[in-house]
Picture 1 (cartoon, rainbow, N blue to C red):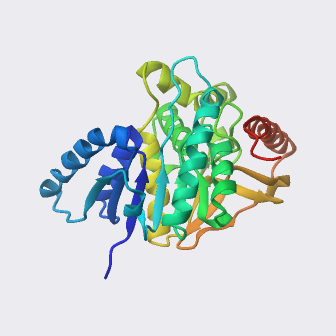
Picture 2 (picture 1 turned 135 degrees about the vertical axis):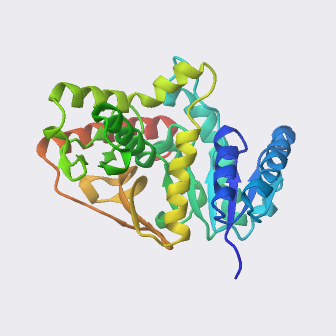
Length: 313
């Protein structure tokens, strides 16, 4: 039985962490790709990860390259390429340079891995994934951005930290854009099936919501150079596993909506069923008026960024 092939476009902190996690879980053979001028450190990271194999007993292959021909036949491609934001920068501050990078990457992935499921992490992700979709010409079911998967994990973590209860028993959802207008859905959040509002005061819940919305910025400011990578990589691996093993997991992702939640023609974080066919379904559920207002607000923020990038003429 042949193994899955996973291509990582971008060998920085997120890409190399995904490579480590992917090989440890034996999800498939991995190709780490980066530009020629950056490839020596990527070669070094690949050799370092390969030397981990004897400790865990996994025999998957890991290759580092600057040649896009090496990603041919990939089942999944994760794009982490781009400039990360630094302290006092918004995700939109890196828009112009990252759009140019993604336009180039999109054409090469379409040429060499046209049947792959593609996950993008590059910021501002909701606009970047839209640009990739436009320039690659791939099907909407093949393309998602990392947004809700990461944001939901942060929401879940902060709920666990605040309540003191196991993170395994927390169930919650974050929708909307990957930024300060994201929408942690407090109404449906539970711990062990118990509504969050029966466990915490409105004041503490509002604190968790705001910390979730600004979690990425909090990490950027603390790091001083670069942005989150452990949690981002973990969220991506969770998405990959659902596709590889056809788990049908419901994972919030930045997907193309065509009427869902009153959104038409934009990528935004919504609950998606991820399986062997990629984005197999966007699940809709009835929102309250306040929640719908927040969706409309975050959509306006995404539209502004998309227009700024010139993605939609």
